[in-house]
Amino acid sequence: MAVASVYKRVLPCPPAIEFASQEGKVLFAEALSDGTMNGFFRLISTFQTQAEPAYCGLSTLTVVLNALSIDPGRKWKGPWRWFDESMLDCCEPLEKVKKNGITFTKVTCLAQCSGASVQAFRANQSSLDLFRSFVETCVSSDDHHLIVSYDRRPLKQTGTGHFSPLGGYHRQKDMALILDVARFKYPPHWVPLSLLWDAMNTIDEATGKSRGFMMIYKREIPACFLFTLSCKDERWRAMCKHILEEVPELLKTTNLTSTGQVIHTVFDSLPADIASFVKWIVEVKLAEDEVDRDETERLHYKSKVLQQLRQTTVFALITKWVEENCVKSSVNESLPNVIMQACCQGAAAFTGIKCSSNITCIKKEGEAEVRLNEDRGDTVVLSNKLLVDGCEQVIDALVPKISTLNTVGGPCQSSLEEDSFHPTTRDLLAILLLALPTSMWEDIPNREVHSEICRIVSREELPFELRLEVEHLWEQANLVSRSCSEET
Image 1 (tube, helix red, strand yellow):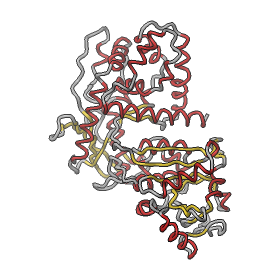
Image 2 (cartoon, helix red, strand yellow):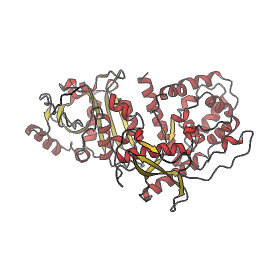
Image 3 (cartoon, rainbow, N blue to C red):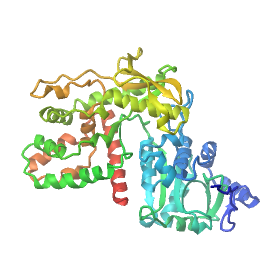
Image 4 (cartoon, rainbow, N blue to C red):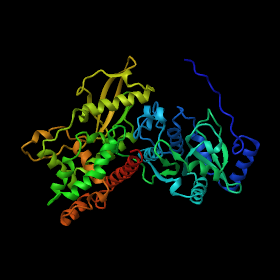
């Protein structure tokens, strides 16, 4: 059936004032003179149109991340590293975003995952005066930017929920400049700040929660993370609820006399597919490109994090639990399968193919070519040969490498025979345990055990690199917990 086409919409004026109009130009000049357009130039340098009608959240975040000069740590096209909407898929599958859009909490989570720091506020838990103070802070700076989540209808615009970056502010007229990423629909425009606040102070019907605003800025220390939480698997809500609600109750009602029993109680109760909730990040590239210095340094850093993790008491306890319970990684968690999936995702990103059915692995699992990075002994390069839309392509996966573990033989030693130079299930469980909120352990009845487990999982004594990794996951866990509560 034919669908009628539409060329743009007429911007309702008032209440808006088009940025390119004569009045809009005067507002810009006055605000520029007043010092409240400083953030505009960084944003306009990376401003783009959303690639899909429901991609406003992804596009807005892409604009801001690129304006902050945050390195995504992976290539976009050719040799270039640059944020693109297709990269923002760690919290929600792109096909789902394409159909339903994305929630306020998920955008916050994506910003964190992408290496930014975020301060997010729901309108119903904030105030117009606080919003105005954040607006003035961000527009007076070129290293802090504001994203607004609002309902278009109070602005007399068509549509409902929308995200856009805020490009400037006119203090005397109390008007904000919205850089609307739906440029096919509306141009950038000025709106009264109080009216924008009313548009934010509305309920998102998808979550039952208020919309709001968030300030995004660059971390003092660049992001280079080895682990991440994943919400792409639809079972993540059940896992989140189990870990954050049911496990603490279990610890409260169980007679625990040692930290080993705590570990057993926690992990014996976890679902078998817990590894789909916490994952390690695989960096991929085209095989024809050499491993550059930045990639080498990132892999060296990740190897250091992995080595530090395996020297913790938590890792030793989990290794003992794995050995005693004959826990083996599933096929999905095996190195060949992880690498194959990463290479397929990389091929899709490099070629722009959105349908995974058009990509097949020519080599069978376990046959990927393995070679050491000549510049560093702590990086392994695994190559997978793929068929992409009928054309053969070779994708490299870069894997951090450390010395294999020295384990003591036990009744189920075969459970530890997997190659351990790369991140394994034990590492995923260890980093997850370290990143859990301290409130998890508060109700353990035995106070000696409580004190000991708190000491073991404390972040204060961790090496610097590992502590940053744990804090990153802890921030993600908080966001996931909030998202879980608003979507149940």
